[in-house]
Image 1 (cartoon, rainbow, N blue to C red):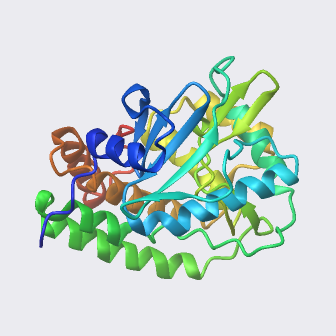
Image 2 (image 1 turned 180 degrees about the horizontal axis):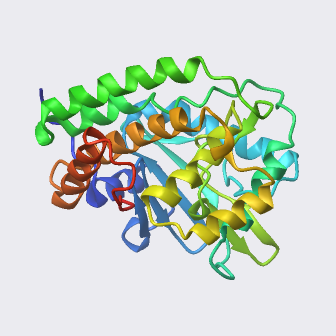
Amino acid sequence: MADAPAFDERSARALLATAVPEVPAADAELIALGENAVFATPHLVVKVGRDASLLPRARHELRVAAWLAESAVPAVRAAEPEPRTADGHPVTLWHRLPEPARAATTTDLAELLRTLHALPEPGFALPKRELLGGVERWLRLAGDAIDPADAAYLRTRRDGFAAEAAALTPHLAPGPIHGDALPRNVHIGPDGPVLVDLETVSDDFREHDLVVLALSRDRYGLDPAAYDAFVRAYGWDVREWDGCAVLRGARETASCAWVAQHAPGNPAALAEFRRRVASLREGDPAVRWYPF
């Protein structure tokens, strides 16, 4: 298998310079590097997609942003309605939010989710939350950096959880969800909490948005008191639902594969990938994972 082209700060800056020549790429601050390279300028935030396959997702995020604006939901606002491209990579422009007034809490997240979950479906089709849909692409991007046996294990696990998830009966009425409901995706501005990172907004089980924090409590060191505050603010604990373990298992599988894409040339990512896979193989739900 040929190695995937490198996507790092240098290559992302070059794409930024091509797509947004009016922004001095050398002066833009890199604030995140994952599925997108996210750059901040004085007035804009620019997201550069990791590869060309993310173009439909970028278009979706911009459409969702427009819908949330029309629905008066506090969320990040797009600066342009359509993505630009550079060498096939999608590039989207967003209004920069003011400096945060404070760190977001789980209560802030719960209140925004209640607002989002109360919305009717928009006038366009939202996709299902394909939680496991990126697994193959992430493993492909990992290439030979990861053990082929680990990749095969995650593919088998993906297929098993996909089948189990398809058979679930939700407790809550399905509808619009955020899809990656974490406090890091909430910005506290002068007027209160604002949702950010809208790429995974979907039409699916509301439980998807609630399992995220349950997993954070168990795997990522979220304070149990913060989790309890989230439950109180939202009004229901997803752990009471008999499908919780299935969605949790699917999300763990996806999270392992997501880290794998960073393994080429990044020893810390490779070590975290191996930690996660080993804990899944051993069936230990309490091994601490670290955000990457």
